[in-house]
Every structure is written in structure tokens, then in C-alpha cells.
Amino acid sequence: MKKAIHIPGAPAPIGPYSQAILNGSTLFVSGQIPLNPFTGELVIDTIQNATHQIMKNITALLTEAGMTLENIVKCSIFLKSMDDFAEMNVVYGSYFNEIPPARETVQVSKLPLDVTIEISCIAIKN
Image (cartoon, rainbow, N blue to C red):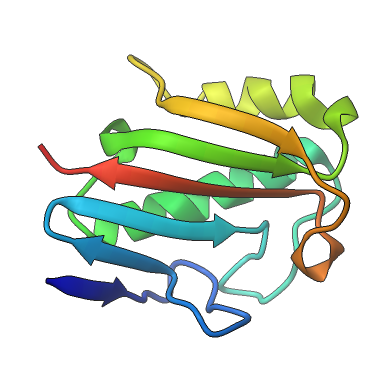
């Protein structure tokens, strides 16, 4: 059975989609941008801070579904510029202490609200 996960600790959708969908033991997290859900402000001063904000948003959604970052099995990262890859990768990697999830990182021409990064993921509860 499909259940929408909507929480105040993650940004409200800016379109007709759910923050995340829990179906059985699998959580599908929609693409998260570096939007601070408490202030409504974009965190765009550096790619490092933007990545941290996104990972905080993802963590909030996982927590609501009874999961942690360790439950993530797949991430998709969209960057406006691959020039930001190394700095993003250091921050992203700091969130995974053991086995990191499968992942792809691609450069795209434009992202919602003209941000520099967006991350989506899939998590499975064991």
C-alpha cells in the first residue's frame, strides 16, 4: 500500500508530487533541493552548504518513515556543473559511514528554482 510522507522537517513540494512515498518497506524520496524548510530560504551560498541542507532534508524524510541514511540503497545526484563534483562528493560521502548506496551523478542544464544541486534516493527497511 502506498503512503505519502509529508513532514515539516523537509521542504513542501513545489509541484504536484509528494515529498516521499512509502510502499511496503521501500521509500522513494523525491528530488530534494537545498531549501531550508523552516525558513523557506534556499541554501545556495556554496555547494557544500547546499549538499548539507539536502542531506538534512533527506534525513528528516527517512526518520519519518522509520529509517536512517543506512537504509538508502540508491541515490541520484543532479549537478548544474560537474565543476562542483569534488566538493559535493566530500560532503555527500561524510553522511555514509559504512556501505555507501549505489549512485549516479549527472550534469544537467537547469534545476528547479535554478539551484545547483538536487538529490533523490530510494531506501529499503530491512
